[in-house]
Length: 348
Image 1 (tube, rainbow, N blue to C red):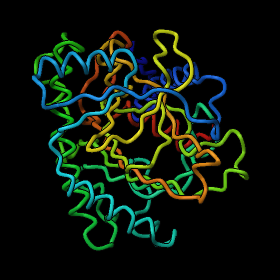
Image 2: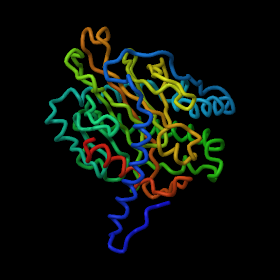
Image 3: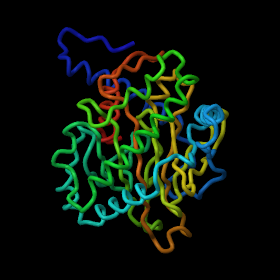
Image 4: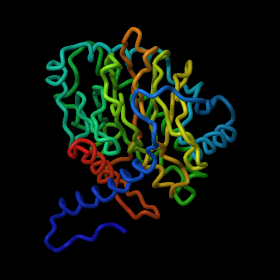
């Protein structure tokens, strides 16, 4: 049940306590999922996650999505309707931004944890690992006013980001609408898609542009990752990857006792999709928010050292939306706040 407010607590203190309690549960799940042998430079593993063709009839697509979302929590979609030109333009804008000096990036898009937006450089410490991710990122949160004074000044960045956000949001709503009747039969039809509003006062959907710099793997400590094993905080993540940029992996069907990691390699014309903690909670755990990581490149992949770029769009319900489940009730705003605090305020 939700945390009761003591008479001496202010509303803000009570909200923070509830957010931290919820985050602690998710962090504990991350630690339980974290398997031995998953260090940052370990060799790539077997298999790939399912690929689902969205041009098939909705019933077939829904059945394939439910199976993947329940068993491994990851799949890739093709024929998704987002123009390749929009994806290419966003990747180009990302590379231009990250190609600047670090000081320029921080000045253009200062990070604000309370807004969940802006530029950060190797500051995210996963609670499950205690070590900083070897990456830099720019978070564009689609909330009214959040990006004021944080839009990069590089040519074409804002329109490219806005175009991709709009297209990804539409696709995300379609996928959530397909999942909802089976995964969340207790919700009125249209609840999931209606919970995500772009550029509204309480909007929380976020586009995260990611750059993993080239690394000399011989000098990286064993317990470092490009992105440490974690689960996502959102309802649904859409991940855009570049061909040849391997390294994303998810735990191999932990519900069936699977061990090791599955590849989530880039698929030609495809987008990787995964279930987040928020939707797992909303579905009363019928859908799996699975542990995933971006491992360090193998010595062979690092000859020569090269960067890795990706873009993640997080479907995160609006702040005021109440997520009710067998785990209790919490607003989406408090839920995200707790996860931000666990990743950026506390080191370990």
